[in-house]
Image (cartoon, rainbow, N blue to C red; front, side):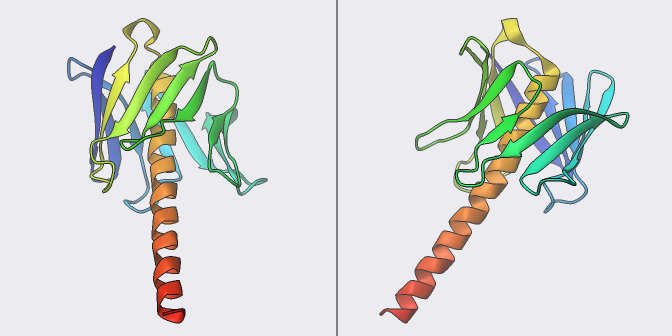
Length: 170
């Protein structure tokens, strides 16, 4: 496994390999909208945007052609990316994170936020050097950032509901 790092510069998340070479970029329209973006990797430019048919899905396009769909489970928030050779899984535990697993169930990469409690917009990736696939890695990084944003909103809503309950039933 090799260590790679991703970080934000304004609205662009940049992934660097272990030699500090650019692997790819996720360019978001704003600091608050982490749902839609342009993904640049291997001299390719893909667009991730909201599905027009399903509010629980994002679509990945290249030159207007649909390549992948990123589906969100309505109840648990699990992300599934179609037409890929890997699966996205959450990592349970105190540090949390996202794991990318190949079809054989072998870990391809693990992605963690540098601070699991507050999003400092810095990420550490442990990548299997033998299976280094930049596009899949960038899709996994997108899924991690998007999933982390959803988790942050869930924690905020739960805390607000807890405070309201405390005030009402005190």
